[in-house]
Length: 181
Image (tube, rainbow, N blue to C red; front, side, top):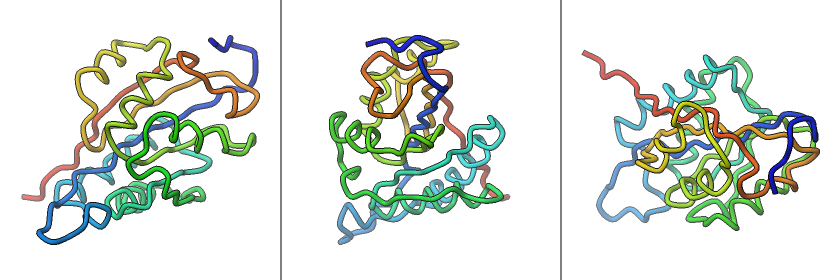
């Protein structure tokens, strides 16, 4: 189902893959923290969203340590971060599980930030995007690396209406933080 412009308010789904994680010996996957590069890149993702005037009304975040740290460092770049819901279903989620979480979002949320993991996030973006601007869909198909941000826009009365092919992928960027000299 393609949702036509004018069929409801503009909604944006911002998909953020967690920043680069470390691989400490003996640490369970769910508990892996961000690597130094991830601690640089996550704030860059937050700044990129602020510069794009794409701050969320609500964030849904995986319970994995690296996802939570990505959220905390990105949100610290904004004056007043929105509420965040930690959702265990997002850890290792596939497209149906991710869509289930998104479709539960309250109607008053216009911009939703979803922070999680690949391959689920990349597959979600490819599933939802019926088209894209400036070759963004090709960029996602090529690679959706750590700290990647995809912005999907669509018109709908509520989040339950979000369907495959209904959204326009307006942007895909990979913000990177600078190493200190």
